[in-house]
Amino acid sequence: MPDLKLNLPVILIILVIIAAVAYVFYKIHYTKKKGIETDAIITAIEDEDLSTDASYTYYVRYSMNGQTVEAKLSNPGFGKGREVGAQIRIKYLPEKPKIVVWVR
Image (cartoon, rainbow, N blue to C red; front, side):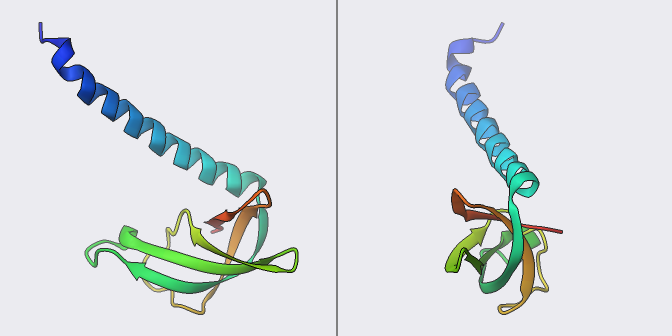
């Protein structure tokens, strides 16, 4: 039988990573379901790694109650092809306006 004490730190790290990923997916799902839908403009695109579409980070600007909000998309999901200045549909939560998700 393998020594569980040696593997315990690795197991704990894996469990923490799984919990963090689950939380991110839950927040995206919750925002898509309960959020307020509006238009946003892509203001910046950062390309972390040219080899994969998932490496793009999109920043958007939208209006909430007459105020301009700058935010990072939680689920870019549309990869290459979008440009700065493009209009997209997003959802946000009024209590957390910096958490925005792209609406397909």
